Length: 212
Image 1 (tube, rainbow, N blue to C red):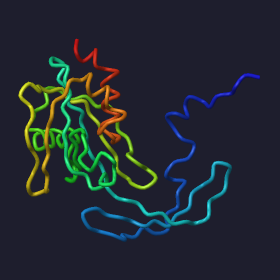
Image 2 (cartoon, rainbow, N blue to C red):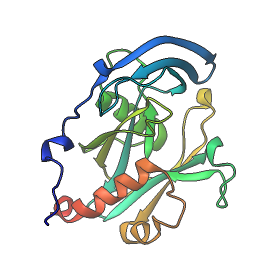
Image 3 (spheres, rainbow, N blue to C red):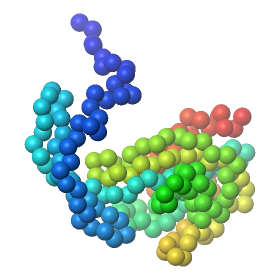
Image 4 (tube, rainbow, N blue to C red):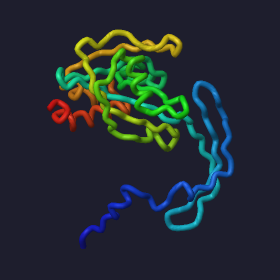
């Protein structure tokens, strides 16, 4: 008997949506550098009927941008390095190699505008071109953060140095690497965060096109 596969349309549209969720309360339980909300809710089941009411906490981050920096002429990738509290227990330590990134914290501001600003603040660079890779939820089981991820083509021939805003306690080092070196180390090195890995894997698939 041949396998029956799910309909292709399921990849684009779910049977249930946000109208199938009943939220009875949403309270702010922490409001500091970040915000945490507590929800009491229930939702429909796939087989029909409703779940019992239950409680979930949500780390509220909102939208963010991130960009992998590539110079097709040099076949080089630039990564930033900075202290990250969440990585303090990692064997490699809390200084992570990452893509340029930042939060969208002004109402009505386009992601591309924020990406251009963060590129200058964190790397001292101006994009030659910018291509959207994907929009994805970083960890939807616990946070509402939506990442707008870009491939940023820029001139890395003179890139490097220390960047960041003192007002945001940033101390960011920009380094330029050969693309082959980054790809060889990306799954077992210090590029151990989702935006960087997704950006690098996209770059592997599109590198030849960008170099033409």
